[in-house]
Image (cartoon, rainbow over all chains, first blue to last red; front, side):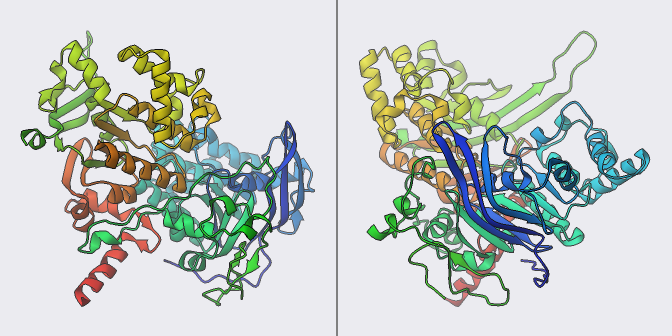
Length: 345
Length: 282
């Protein structure tokens, strides 16, 4: 993997502290994410991983402030972007931040592009709205951006409608759009889940290039540990609205501490048998059950009911995130796990 | 054992093209979705079909299901051409061959409870009584790991994994022999993927099903399939056992596809060189 030297001495670009997001439901309220702490330094790629219902998307929606007011009960904690708190900011200032400092790449490109306008025009519109440039300059910039996204004939793509483009091209256009105002952070919500493996690899490579060439910080969501291993500097594993394990990607993958992380890793088929002389006699690991319903109160560890290691104690005590013995000590990133069995530092 | 020698499904020089209609003044451009594809699937095996999107995988699956008619060529099921089936034979074929879609959510009617939808072919096709049909439905739901009371739920009340299980239950209800799995796990979480693949595996062991597994999750194909065909632009470029395809890919399309597998230990090629080192030491 290509790891780039990253300085960690500076202040984090995005600093989320004790974030809890509460949503209204018919019987009161429910915390969809609870006590989330994340620190993203400049130029890093952080990947959030977990099943559906684990709170990954809610974390991103909280950062982007995209939860509809009708649903939202309230936030606790803080989301600091370059020292200014997004949660206490007024709408006008938030507008200025979105796109310019922080922008979003969604899973389904079709929903973020307007089907009735040419894609080039949609990017130009964004540039004109946020920067003081002439129309011609904006067009030049758009074509330049498209070229940087690895699109061979940017002029033709500029003139195309979204439905005329393939899934991979559409995702490139979306990334170009996200980059159009030179944001510091790109947030990508499963940017490749809907794509073919070959196209997925191209898009991931593009995001890596963006990270390297523009120094853009990336916060990405996925449920595929293959993607984590390919992309991430740091990884955050979420389960039922809580962070259950976090650390440097290589630490978490090579030495997972939380049973949930271990289980997720085991769900990926092991391909080593192909290159040995034996037959495939491995069987696929299953995590029994499903992500718990957060509207019902859970005492103790939220993963206990599905855990292969659970003991009686697990369903009584709510475990805290504890520091565990990290494999690599080169970085100041701690390796944390929310399990009573985690080996302590 | 003559029956075992005949492949269950044999696809012979299959061609499917779309468009090409002649109007008064012009002829529209025709697109060849499937160009001269031949393959045979043996009883009890899992046959994988991989390739990029648009390579014609799903079109082949649909033609085998007779949801589409081929432009040319034929499909033999148990030695008989499906395009020349009589009405009665066709009815029989419809219950022997079932399909599981990528998104079972859109394959269910949102306005009816899933139990009724699963029971429908039994009542309509096999003339079961309502009670006998529901009994069979409960049995099928149990087989796929869903509780009885799921029969009364509507599709939107189920999670993605549960919907996929319900989709499998619906395919099982007519006791099929051959199942076309059209990207059955692509839309699911990693953990749910593993659950569904294990379920399909167990069902195969129990009922000796034959599967055509259309997928682009190559790691699951490597795990699940006995033989694999690689498609590119409507043609099959390589067919071999799964182990051979993944170990010694011959075609450059296959090589490119394999290169895109993301594993925990870096790319597949890295594992490969590592594994060869271990083998050469031993």
